[in-house]
Amino acid sequence: MNLQDLEKYSSAITLSDMEVFVFPELMYSLVLANIMSPVLWSWRELEPFKKLEGKTSYRKLMRLRQFIMDEFDFNLDLETWGLTTQETELKRFAHVMSPDQIASSNALFGYTGDRYYFDVDIRKHFGLDKYDGEVIPYWKTETVEAMAGFRRKPDYGKAAGECVSLATLYAAAAFIVCGVPLEDIFLILTPLHSQNFLDMQDGILTNNRRLVTKTMWFNGTEISYKAQRALRNEQVTIVTHPTGYVHCFYDDATIDPKAYDHFRRRLHEYLSAGLDMTSFASFLRQHTQYQKYFQICRDCHGQPQFLKAETLFSYEHSSPYKIGDKTHDKLLAEVHDEDFIRYEIPGRVRCDRLNEFLQRDKPDVQTSEGREAVRRFIEPVVPDAAGLVETLADFLHIEPRLPSREKTFTPVEPIRLSVDQSREEIIAYLSSKRQTIPTVDLAFYAYRDMDTCDWRPFVKAAIERSPVSLGMVESKSIEEVYVWLREMNSQSLYDGNRLAQPDEVANYLTGDGLEKAFLLANVLRRRTPEQALALTVDNGRVLLRGAAEFEFVSAKHLQKRVQVSPDGQIQA
Image 1 (cartoon, rainbow, N blue to C red):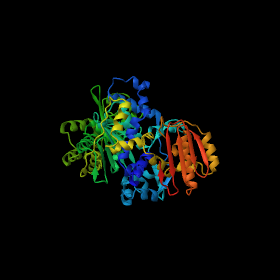
Image 2: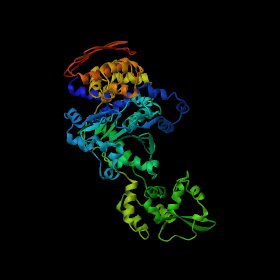
Image 3: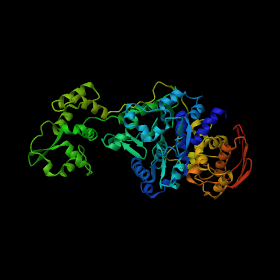
Image 4: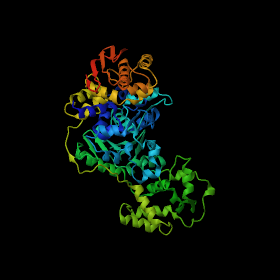
């Protein structure tokens, strides 16, 4: 393994936002690591999912959404995994990507998105505004085991993760628990967000803990508006899939071009809605400034009655019924009689006549002719009719900024997993593909399979990119650190011979003796870099040698000897 490969493979261990951005294979490697994890397979045995055996994937997916909402929090604490510096990260990846490219599209290096992000101060929302200097957070992506570890942290009580963690979790769980084929799942990364497109029915987008159907996407609610933020305002950096990936900066792409074309078409369909009274009502729900130009008309014993649009929208707040859909009449029935007026309200468009116009003429506001037709219809009443129509057209269609189709598509062997395979069959298949599919090989590093992986990437990540553990013991002597580790809970986050990194041990205050030894090695490396380190692992006995010897007891069944020289060279 040369130095560049060592950097990539160690990145599969730490999985920071920056590392996934530079090495796009890592995103799918984490999906595969979660698919191999026993955690997600255990969900299939839970009562909520056992009851849905034989049901459709869509039905199971809706239950999965509620399960994730109940069991997981969205973690916005950027300092969970410690701090690094821009200089350190730029130096690490200079052989892959220029600093200018990184700064123009990575949230930790000055990226702010387009005008929208300045208006809503999105960097402040994410807490990025305090990182305008040299120091930046690691912003690491968690495996499902590390997400579960948050339950051990004070003030959490639930599992948690940031958006990339939740996206990879959703992709793996949709496959394992819901039976959604991997070929129907596309992962989408932007500089400030990560989500998935599921190619089923009219399309479904995951958004942190939520799922957004096409109907929900265009319902005009605040939640849907926030869900649209990334695709409305950001350049999509990476799209990845079982056939490969495409990156906005790299000229070469490995994704199957037919699969990418299919995704682009299906996403375009999902992000576009036709104009009818349901979608127009959703438009008014979001753009409340236009409600004052419209009125609702109903028949009451053969006589027309009229209602201000904003009055009816106010009734929605406390009702399960909505304007413009099949529950419209039920909502009208909830309105107090005194809110109705017996005469047509001047200066307002009648929605019943607007509906007749839309059904008769079927204007397409994505065309100039359609926009002009709508403008003419509302212009006698709406002062800035052209402005409303342009806003309406923007509401009904989002044009995502996807990586260009003009790439050199280099075919790679696709990852072929079936929803009918067992966990054991999947792991066996993936093991057989490690030599031919690099993403699969990287997945075993993200999975922390210490039985079959080169240990050097794990050690490199442990002693170079574990700042939380260093900060946590800053005031302790080495002997005090050793005592603290010996007294700590000895349960590993990971089953079998898989290992947690030092910062996972430090954050969750639990770890196997071997994992504790790596944490101490990280501390020794920082405090006495001139001292060589030697770690001997002989099943239950772990011995770390530096200037002194430190012994730990491990429940793992591993045998290895690791040496770290003063200049940082690692032998295993």
